[in-house]
Length: 399
Image (tube, rainbow, N blue to C red; front, side, top):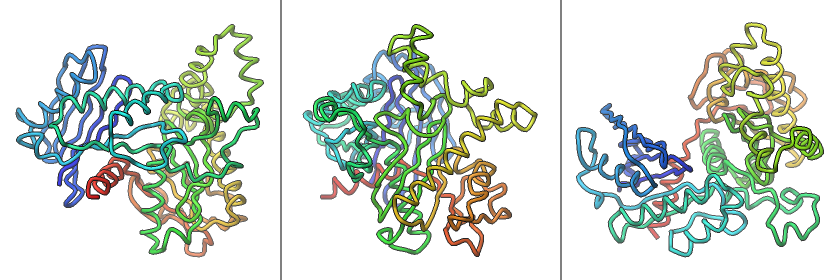
């Protein structure tokens, strides 16, 4: 059985074609610069590639090019879209309406679009992609949507409520939603399997660290708290995002710069974080290199990131009344062994002790990196959101 997995952004459409018989990736690619000019980058499992400039006025044209690329030309991998059993889509924001993956209907698409105020960059683009996909794929091929926020719907009210008037929650749906849920769900389950334990018996802190980062407390396989909030801006310092900031600092800075609310949002989402503090860039590799060459601001932002991760691990251990494992995933979590080492340093009070010989140089591989006498397991667990989306899609259509 073959499933197409789609991750649509405001101006991009990433995809993977997965053979669910062995969960292998047949092909993957990205239709980029939708609404601007257009480009497709496509690669097959046997190494064939296609890179071409295209005209993508909307997501529909991008989907048509995706279909053409998969089914024709030198980089084709299937003869027709009839070979695809279903399409699975990643959706960023499902609010408190969607607590699980669902099969797509016109009503579901409308509801996703209605939530665009909560994720203006993503949800409208998701709706456009869903409608475009429906117009291109053969009739009768089901679509499934998998929500980043769904995994966090198990958080109790004491974790997701803000100290604002209750009417803002009732009328405006202002609350913590959390993000990266698809990744946190995948890696926590993969960790339990690697440890040979039932996830229901584990208390895990999952650290998804990348250009966007979030930390999640997973108790018995359920999210009970997470660092990102109403939007993905909250939590630890990130590539271009500020992370948590005193709201009064936000209004103060906005007033001094004469920013509109939209301009302040842009300032905190796109000009802050690693980039804003260091002045070097938003990529952790550039920050690490600059810090190694004596750049004090780069070193500062690295210290901030490590310090904030430590605080979340400690607070979530307290919230769960225990800790069995800490896992690192995402681009930084899987590859930046220096960040992992600094986070785990001086954490003996929590029973965390790293095996530096194993951790040093480890990149992108599933591995236990804690010392033999560490009371808490520490692991690197590569994430695979596309595979989880495909699995959810398969499970739903099989019913």
